[in-house]
Amino acid sequence: MTEPQQLDLIGRHIDRLVTVEARISPTSRNVIVQLHEAACAAQGGGPLSMLAARQILKHLGPGKVVFLTTGAGDPRYLPAGETDGPPGVAALALAIHAATGAVPLLFTEEPFRENLAATTLAVGLGIRPPEHALEIGFTTAVLPLAHDDSAEQQAVSYLDTYKPAMVISIEKLGPNKHGIAHTSTGTPTAADRARAECLFDEAARRGIPSLGIGDNGNELGFGLIADAVAKYKPNGERLCTRVKTDVLLPANTSNWGAYAVEAALAALVGKPELMHSADIERRMIEACVATHGVDGSTGRHTLQVDGMPADVSCAIVTMLGCIVRNGLVTGFKRAF
Image 1 (cartoon, helix red, strand yellow):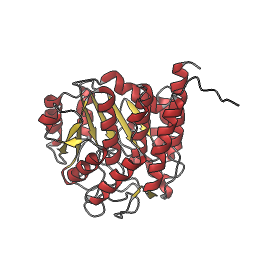
Image 2 (cartoon, helix red, strand yellow):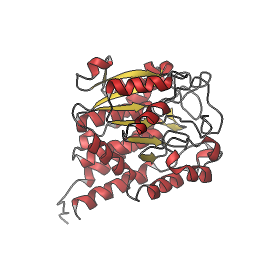
Image 3 (cartoon, helix red, strand yellow):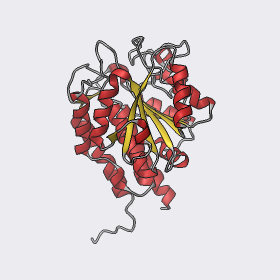
Image 4 (tube, helix red, strand yellow):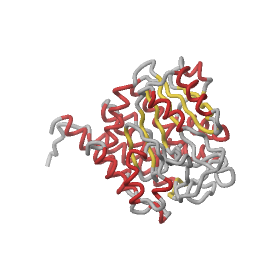
């Protein structure tokens, strides 16, 4: 087996693992696999984790800046956001920095900044003001996104100031063609939803590459496969975002999609140690909940992600690490 074939096989196993459906919501059943298959067909048929990781390695390097955004919430039920999104952003930001030397800058709603910062500290990235994060390794900054008409000018300002070489969205809701964003059940979101789409619209105008990771079709990026979202997701035609990204990766949870890219990066650069451990995964979820993050399926302050116990996410991380480590082994022969 050639090295490209070996990496392709690792990517396919990564994709298969993170698209296993284990959610409690009926509106999410038999959806992720369909959306993942549609995304594969729309993007050449190869493993999407590897496609995303190669995009990162192509566009990022020492001194380059990458924007990562997350944050799904509601002032009544999810006032500080949920446990799906922040761990994925934190883990992928660290992996990108470790693999490429690029500087990650994180963006979310003002009420979610403490939560995202705590989760990011738990993975091992320090929090600094942005001017310091640009100069100090293994650090980042958490910056606010506007929810009103100032969002468009804010996006211009952020891109002018930091000049990102890539923008990434993980569990970040986007508006449909009528300008309305919806939850995964098809309910319009609260008025104070941060308009992260402005970052992606402006990035697209400037030719800056983008990556979208999500799990229900209402997140930034799924405009790439709008017909499939309308076909397979209940209320899909209403909730699907208009926003397309250059690469789209659907997964059972958005965190898992981010971990898939992290694992693919680790495989591509030949460093399995880039994949975070189950202990760190639990630490991130605990930090997220301790700063008022909730399980996105139940709205409860419990160690769950989209209705699945933290142990499930820890197991997924362990399995991804094993897929990479063992998949990179060459020349092994049994003695019997």
